[in-house]
Amino acid sequence: MLSTMQDVPLTVSRILRHGTTVHGRSRITTWTGNAEPQRRTFAEIGERTAQLAHALRDGLGIARDDRVATLMWNNAEHVEAYFAIPAMGSVLHTLNLRLPAEQLVWIVGHAADRAILVDGSLLPLLAPLLPRLDTVEHVVVVGPGDTSVLDGCRPAVHEYEALLAGRPTAYDWPELDERTAAAMCYTSGTTGDPKGVVYSHRSVYLHSMQVNMGECMGLTDADTSLPVVPMFHVNAWGLPHAAFMTGVNLLMPDRFLQPAPLAEMIEAERPTHSAAVPTIWQGLLAELAERPRDISSLRHVTIGGSACPPSLMRTFEERYGVRVVHAWGMTETSPLGTVGHPPGGLSGEDAWPYRVSQGRFPASVEARLIGPDGSEMPWDGKSAGELEVRGPWIAGAYYGGAGAEPIRPEDRFSPDGWLRTGDVGTVTPDGYLTLTDRAKDVIKSGGEWISSVELENHLMGHPAVAEAAVVAVPDEKWGERPLATVVLKEGAGKVSYEELRDFLADKVARWQLPERWTVIPAVPKTSVGKFDKKVLRARYAEGELDVTRL
Ligand code: ADP
Image (cartoon, rainbow, N blue to C red; front, side):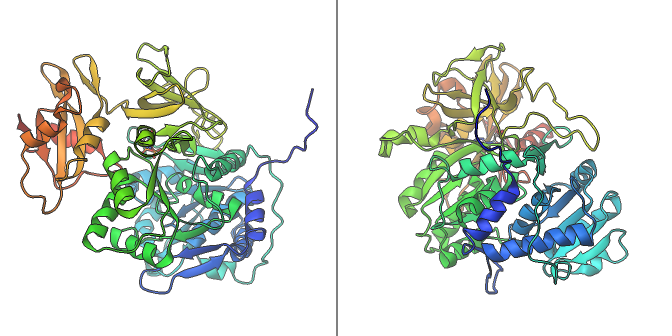
């Protein structure tokens, strides 16, 4: 028997219409460095979004399903692109501006992007690639920049404001099938070619509702959120879309992502929430220690993308009264997978074990753990396995390219359709996930697994340690053993490897203690600011690290 309910497609244009009318007074503020910030209401954004859609369709001839790329920082114009492109039935493709040139060229070609919206400040990055971006017919330059670098290039060049000027401020958004593509994002591709994940209107809509739930970020129009996480990093974790559902004001950092300007904009614009990877917060803590600022407006921050050291969570809370909420996700999960709010009724130290975990699965994310022998492991908080997930905002395949079938690599998708996350961990009976490692980072020592993340978290709790990354290195006797690479805090004075090892001794099993140690100036980072352990392993293999063996 069928229901009697209306069948209304869940589309991005619905979010846009709601945000720009019901929440028309909410604002996007874009930081501009030394000048007065740029401020726009959601109502104004709505009009400009319509103008952009007209410009893309009538001016540039962008049609349904055409891919339009953005090479942009977090700013109001990027939000306009976020809504205009999917709402008109085309596909938004956010480009990660920190990827190596080769990968960007490959990704643009694979997605067959017809147009690129680029921030003027990023033209020096785009211009040298253009001769190889064969599918690109139009470049739209947003904001000031030296356009002379585009002289003589093949695609037509347009200026964003000029392209929008005079166009109608309303658009008759098409009624789309909710399963059609809204946006796409390529994974950073630590191995092999990058993989394209294509989000549907439905997945974006449902994911945005989840982001707004109290058990997730729980924001309202009384909040101002500062998404430091780039809009090219899994849709800024869903914040721009979610904001238009509930009227959350946005403070956009544009290209000012260094600790000093971040501290300055927090003090000046008083956001109540922010979201970023742990390395950003480590940087901000160091900045605040040196140059104190008023960050008291921040009520909570969402940290994810890589494991958040518990010491970082405690410092933020104890020193600044900011509640850190840990979350896990990936490009393939839109990205919201788990969020670390403790169970109701628990607070203080009792809540702590839950808060430092990666968090709890929401109703729409089903999870299972698959052990080394392929069998499903129990949710007992002890048995470890690879995490597999499924749900309405979880990828079921990767983009295969124009006209090609989607691809489902065996190592990423189980035969029964679950996403294999490549993350290894445990789940408690009440659904809290603790990741011990990425499958490829686990240290396999004499048939036992050592969690690199656990060692790192403990090491980063030492007062002299700024950062620590632990990687597996080959060992004659045990197969693999941990190598601890440590970045010392400035002015921390001398600390011996023996002291660091002893510091770990009462925290992990004896046989897990690293015997190989090295101090490095900084941990290499990936394009989205995560520890790049691949680089560390390669440096070790090349003999570039000065390793002491205890
Ligand atoms: P990439 O793997 O290319 O960096 P993603 O940004 O999608 O692309 O990264 C997803 C991965 O990041 C997850 O599979 C997981 O390994 C890691 N990750 C994300 N959040 C967390 C977290 N809170 N704790 C530990 N690891 C995390």
